[in-house]
Length: 170
Image (cartoon, rainbow, N blue to C red; front, side):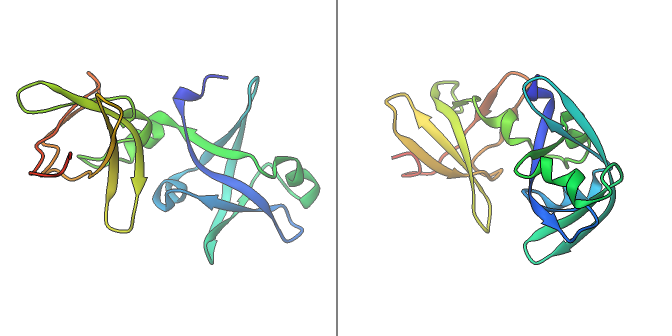
């Protein structure tokens, strides 16, 4: 199954009660709230599930799927990640918001067009996301992903322009 068309938004960590509700760890609350249909993917198949009810409890979401009526139906899915379609995720993004999978692999260029490195990962902290930029000699720098440092993000051409302040990349 081709996973590039889907975005992981959580994982079924356990069951909650005996009526088939799933305890779900999630990565993005708004994407989960807006999802009507989610998918369970493996190497050969895709299972579509409809979210019937959703509530939040402590640091987890409690999800009732229409297709699952009891704990026995749910237990087989424990540990599986849940996905939404990439198209659905893109519709929910605001201007200047990007999917992590689209940023990873982008070339990072200075304003003159010289290659500085490439994005190898994204780290998240409480104030903003950090681009993990690997330079041409293999060093990795964490740079706050803010418009002041990144005036141009071109996902289609897989390039990002950086406008670093002194000391940011050293």
